[in-house]
Image (cartoon, rainbow, N blue to C red; front, side, top):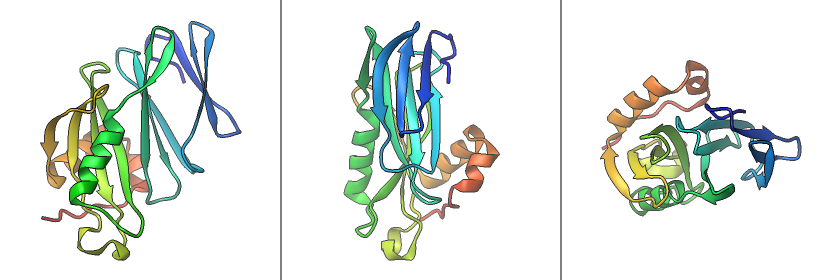
Length: 174
């Protein structure tokens, strides 16, 4: 998958790794988390960063994000720190939580993320609960929070219909 400016490319290989290239130079391989069934890669509009969203089945999601800095890959902190912040307040003890990337903002500077408690009954009263976090991609600093209703409306605007069909429907828990 080429970056918008066509200077960078990500190749997904059969051995569940990705190769990242800049101007034809191989920056190395990245392993995908778990054993993904679904993989979505999205470059930032300025071609400086990308995220990889993987799902192990119809109800799981994880996100990793990287910036290309001086021809090297730098992991961005936003996905990890947003997931940790959400888990402090909403967490499924049986399964953990999901994390979905909604979109890049301000080029590659900000990432809008949607954590979710698994939408299964063994997750208790928080099952299916979502929230939204706009964070600085590099530092993970949370800039804005969104309610379930707000982030799900933004998700419907940003995601192709085909992807939404694979994502469990969310309930707006209070």
